[in-house]
Image 1 (tube, helix red, strand yellow):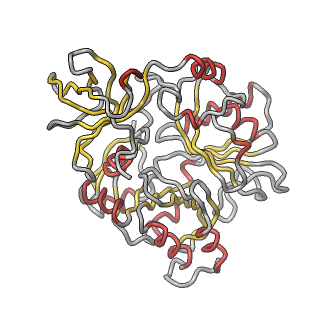
Image 2 (tube, rainbow, N blue to C red):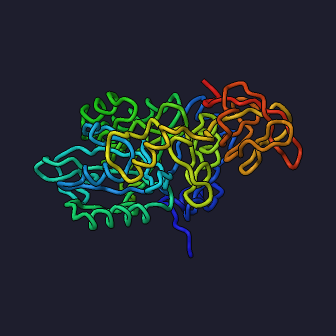
Image 3 (spheres, rainbow, N blue to C red):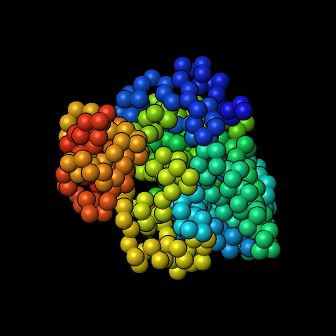
Length: 395
């Protein structure tokens, strides 16, 4: 089956990017080098094409009920423009996917883009509407899950998989806010935006996990103060047909998925399909150390199983470690007690470009999970000393 390509595939190819298969998408893995791109984000700014992420829009009278039943966090806590990290779980509380849920502004017709804007609920604004972001290759699965649940319970909600309509870029790093503010304040020809000061002021006022509609380089976009690097920054969702104009509005280092991976590992962020997988590595939010994304006082699929687990406790938990000897910890390597007894397994690992130290993420027996605990990693059959270090690994 042919892999999907982001709207700017040819632009990235012309820029010298190398590509990799990720979630069924042909995505740029690096433009210059992972270390160069990683350093740019930590020290100044970089831009990532993350158009492989899905977009599912949910609106209508029962949109809130549908979102509340199928995500683990409390969507009723969201005001228009707010977002939250959440998970999608099965009846046993196993994570199917993790996601960010946005409550969209009220007042534009449901189920379609209006002047380039994401759908935003009923025309009268009486009902909240939502956008949520499945991981790469999961949009079809999520859409089917939402539609089937809606139909089984006769809920009145519109569900639209609009992934193919949008491009998504992440501008990340200490200089990212100024870059985004400038792109909002100027139009596609480098002149003051026709949106005037309103869009720029709205974007400047955004706190972490807030979003708004704004013109970016003259293109109507959804601008969110979110990201996956641990740095300040924004994610911009824009119409796919206007993707190149928005991408070119940011004069900073283009970055691929390689740097995105090393950046997220330094902060201990989970990667769907690697740090958890419902088939290969089934984990609950409590095991994955993201219990903060679970609101047990709401009714969602998997709630009872998670309530029981919270009361009983978990046997293993997600944490990090630093390898004290030469080597690189990798996915699938065993974590041991130093005397040959397996106590866990790594799910991610790299040589940290910031620290120049080998770091790993994975699941370990709770008896060994305290910070500073001395353990070992079996690297090619040889136990190498390591120290449990709860992420983030950097300030």
